[in-house]
Image (tube, rainbow, N blue to C red):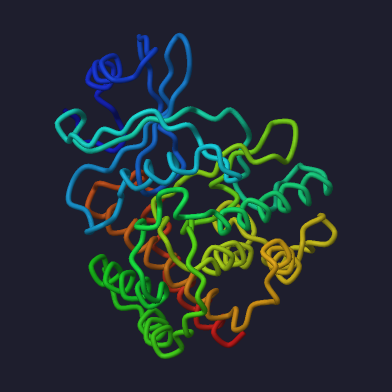
Length: 342
């Protein structure tokens, strides 16, 4: 039984799949995806087809984090909906098999864009992909959670109140140094908490272009990935998550659009993307969007602080990148404070 995030006990996986996955036939090969910092993810290759295995990291983890069972449940529930997801095959919650729970899904053969700049693509392709991203987001927030069997997928009450409290606790549990900007941001998010407006939808929790697979020959989204932070909550958090990424520096580290002439590349402005989303959901507009944006910067700061802590503890999916990401916590906190002034 392996206790590494970098490898799989192939013999154990092969035996388990032979017993539980209809149509499975070995021999089995596996390759770890380098992207992703939370739940280690592996490409499984057999003579007949390809699968993806996503596992919970072994070792001591923050409470409620890395819930692969929730990822499996929500994607299984969305099968056949307007929100494209990979086909789920099985969920194994027995730690004894490979050292932690895991699930297996189809490998979706398409293209993935590392950042919204989509370097090398035409303006028409960029515009179409971002519009498809907008369409999927709006459809996600219009999923009938009762019909999908997800009405109990998240607790009732003020989503932002719950999330700010949760991520403040998670941040404190993984804190490695004092960051004044983060302390100020957490206080400000509590003080300026918006009133409930009655919207209660399925939310992805980390909605970004690099968590999507698109068709090789067009802008159609084939699957939305990485549902670890999904819950029942407020849709503006997902929308703000998109805008948050765009405000990051361009390039392999920030993967944003800061300083980019978007119009020259066929990319929409923040306001245009928000307006398209509101039109699709028939909303009049969004008041105090800066709060939702600040919340997303705060949550991402908490996430990468946790990644850094796991890297220091030796159980990160990609330790070297985890340590590098940790340096950005003050930057995200500072962006959150500035968003509140928006």
